[in-house]
Image 1 (cartoon, rainbow, N blue to C red):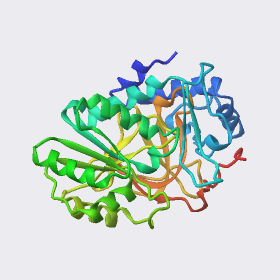
Image 2 (cartoon, one colour; image 1 turned 180 degrees about the vertical axis):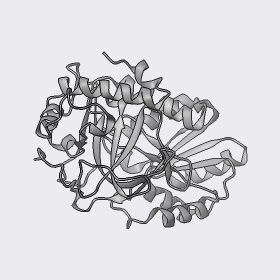
Image 3 (cartoon, rainbow, N blue to C red; image 1 turned 90 degrees about the vertical axis):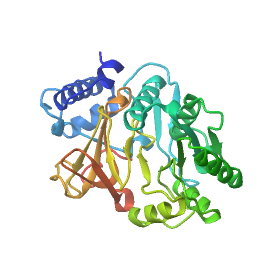
Length: 326
């Protein structure tokens, strides 16, 4: 059996592959949806010997099936946001401590001790619904910071503006985590010159504004907040881990997460580094659901294992990979 210690102490490429193959065999045996998908691709425990031979489950399965590798009771159900009438993803989580261990370890790896920060959150569209994994994470980071001013802001922008200026001027390290459209709303109300604050956008216009390319968006946010770079978080309902960008839209994964770039025309083959394709994610924290997910995002990977997100597939279709999607 694989435990969290095996996952969160991975320290080499060889060790990652060894654990990933172990997780694949476990999920093939215990996740009937994934097993059926693998069988359709004629993949099984005997003929999968390396990372690139592992089948990646299309992310849409989290909308149409119960993707689960455990018989333990469900402790939390994370759901994706969606417009009215739209089918949403459901991630059934049987061990919430795996999620908490994942984001706490990742935050520490990229940013250091959470207690060194005041955490401010501007996530209105997430706060207004149930089942957001992002809200669960940020709420825990707020409490873990132990700072009296850490907290959520909904539509009280004036209060947030005053608090940001006060904290930044005092020399306090601040992280402002915000959904993209709300960060744009904030800088339309006030132009900042922040010296001690990290701005982290979580993506998403949520239908509130027109979509923008990252370079344009980050340029506007940098000018509005008076900061040199914008940080980003790459996560989703279907994952229990996040990758982080410390600027320029280049993301890095924690040691238990890895990105592969598949051919946009042939979902079962991969493209070389620097070439654009579909993003496949290995998230070993997803031990109790599925650790091998073909997302609807387009991106490219670089030689040092960092990656960039460039957009999404049109019509949310993953060609060559929709064998069981209903």
